[in-house]
Image (cartoon, rainbow, N blue to C red; front, side, top):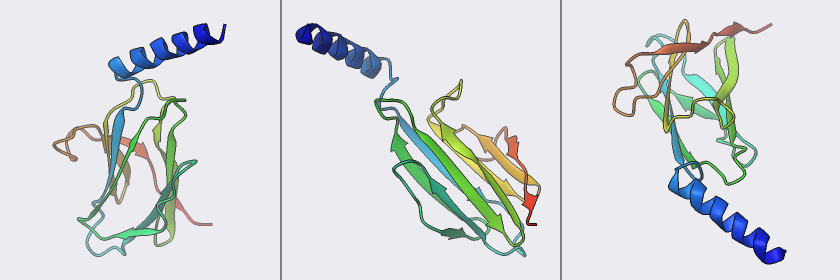
Length: 136
């Protein structure tokens, strides 16, 4: 019985590795495209096992995060952004999403947050994913 379980587990892991479903590398890039006269963008990103600490980037700068999908497939990364009296919180990666990508480019602009999945051009085909909220 124990040997059968180990054999089935082994086959599952081989299948997941060969199909690229397990331990896939993902990259998250955050680009500050706010106007130059705006105060720097502040944020922190976190998961169950990771905390970026407080990050500050100026207009034109970026922040990068790389990680591998874990075997139990429960990766989830979220970020809290603030700029002056505005803020926003949202997931930047969740393994439960229907479509997963290797590259996530988040572009922060004055009217909201945008994403694309192009490893070569972070400004191409942007899709709005979140808005700024005003502090209470």
